[in-house]
Length: 362
Ligand SMILES: NC(=O)c1ccc[n+]([C@@H]2O[C@H](COP(=O)([O-])OP(=O)(O)OC[C@H]3O[C@@H](n4cnc5c(N)ncnc54)[C@H](O)[C@@H]3O)[C@@H](O)[C@H]2O)c1
Image (cartoon, rainbow, N blue to C red; front, side, top):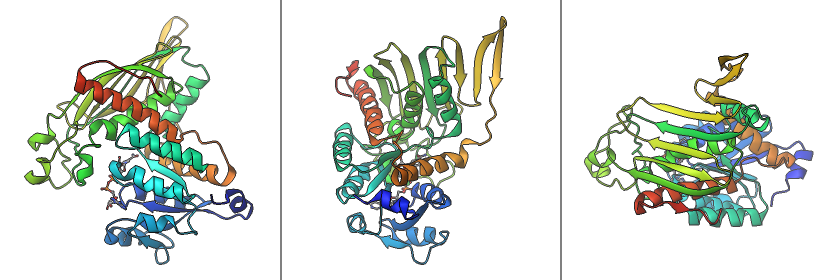
């Protein structure tokens, strides 16, 4: 493993490699913005995507470029790797990094299956490297605020929650990984809603999951992003994932959670979390606390100094760098990604079997 304490003592920055020039760009910008982080290498199968992004980096001329993540992982001048490939490649890329002693941060969802997620968590924990999920919703200021309020007991007992991510025309098809096995709406967007609400609820242990899921738009060539070139028929004919999923998770402590995700629907687009507590309730957007005071209903709008846009990435990058350089305990380890994956896969399995799924191993 890279000697992180020495790096911190030397005042050296955490040297990070970015794999995948899609969401990798947001993570890379935030790492570079942090005075203690530096993007030293890029990796993508398409060199032009790296060349284009390198132009906006302060060290754009020197930044290393790799088309092989295996070769990149052997570079001794890299301390940590961010994995931002399509879902199906998260685990192979991250495994290669941890096997070479690199700290690793993986975008959501952790994997394309529960089995792959477990394999990665086992190896990453055994390697003793910092291992973290990059979660732009959980680390957003509004979600952090609700987590802190919940931990401080502001809601009393939280006993029920709803979380949903709804798009009207938002099926991504620019990368086939999204619409094939291991992709789908729930692993892509439902994961944000589920992870964020699960964190606010204090990571309770799930007992059972029941769900429905299907594809009502994608296989008909409908519901794709308006703003992107529409996919050709030969692309949408390959559709093999869910474009909606919804279900109910029952937790050990009696909490109930209703969770939904739609890539396409005839409903207004929305990302929402609603909390039901014995002393107060809340909504994520707009951030509002509902309670009774002096015999009257009160709706308190919370205006935070930072917005979720942008500062969520800064928070993710800042925490990863603190974990690497200072040994700060990670609040979003890959294990959390795996536990969310266990719930997601159970919901999707329940949709297939039309039965409630019981969660034995968590
Ligand atoms: N808010 C968020 O946290 C957020 C937002 C968007 C996407 N994502 C996640 O990021 C991942 C990628 O999505 P995207 O929208 O950036 O996709 P994308 O297609 O825009 O980018 C993925 C990149 O990975 C590269 N790639 C694929 N296989 C590779 C390999 N083996 N080695 C190196 N590079 C490889 C591709 O060439 C491409 O440039 C997905 O898992 C998605 O869930 C997260």
